[in-house]
Length: 567
Figure 1: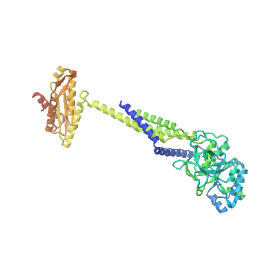
Figure 2 (figure 1 turned 90 degrees about the vertical axis):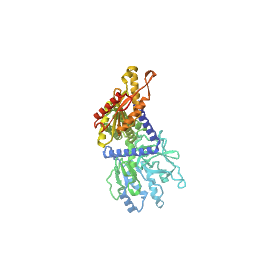
Figure 3 (figure 1 turned 90 degrees about the horizontal axis):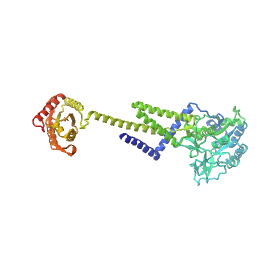
Figure 4 (figure 1 turned 135 degrees about the vertical axis):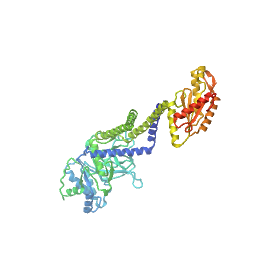
């Protein structure tokens, strides 16, 4: 019965923990942060194992520190004149690249040099494989009136019901918008800890959906993207190839020199995907990602396109899968604890199970691009371990207590048995000898018990034994040890009790028993008397045997002198 109660308690505790875990937003946020960290660790291990390779045809035209310095020295200002970009694009296009994309926003007309703007606009008119970026935001209307976009929108995925929506946008040059529809958004998605792990496929603005730049490019290049399963916010999780500069970086200043005929660049751009973007920290387009704390935004875009093209986006498994994993780990843990006798072995087995599960999540991410949760399932399993250990030892403790009770208790009277009496008397005598503390012994015999059995039957005799035992136990101190000595004889060990005090206690017990009516079988009642012999450590002996011998002699004298008395 107790086992059933404890198992019900175990299940109840799990359900309560699960309920409060779901209900408590702070706890869920903490678990989410910890789970994200396990994702980062797995990604870092994967890139260090060199198990995945990036697409070598994706290159970065990097506005690095050297290029930024070159631009300031040669053009006197930042941003760079837009006709220079047009020249660089012409230079690259002469080698037939697949795509050129600007992770830059051309947001304002440079009034001092409108010819540069026109050169850039004409470049977009000239090439249909050149893309540029724009950004949505939530700036108030009194700062900027939300413009109406004429860009083509996209169809949303049917299960993305929480697409991130923006109320405003930072529009780029109208001439570019008129010249090309190859304009994508470059908004990013950051987790609660500020780390960029996901990217949106599209964003909502004025009840329409506009593609993210990388999604727009990959769609155009592949025609049919595979393995794209967005979450309900229309975002996907990136699968990283390495730290910053994993993709080949070509400094922009070298491209400028080559485009202007100042210097030859020994590089072939044919069939390349070229991303223009800032990598210099001073230009403030730096992100923190799972595999690097300082990661240029343009390389995030390159990673995104690479993932889309090779179908390697990470897919987080549904919540029910993590719940099932937690339940499975918990059940395996419970089996280990219940079936394995040695607790260190059970603990080691449980840790081995958790380690194997963590390895499974690592390989699932490496080969199947699946993100199985680690934190919640293992916490769930750990609680299962703790609770099962507690339950096991409660049951074990109860079984031990029960076995100990059976070994030390008389089954009929429920008093301590003779063996326990001998052990405890020795303990008390040793204690008295060491610390000079008194201890006394009372041996009790039920008067005429044999005749009583013959007259009323053994069942009535057993009933009297039980009731006398209960009366004795009820009327002594908690520290006194009441035992069945044998047959109708009982004994009481009285720690810290002198002989005179023990005699008084014996007399009180004799009176209580003689004044009480005892119930027999068949609703009959009878009076019973007892005789008692008292002995003490020191006065009557310094060993258990001598004390017992003295108490026996006095009990015999009490019975010889008329019974129902103390000697």
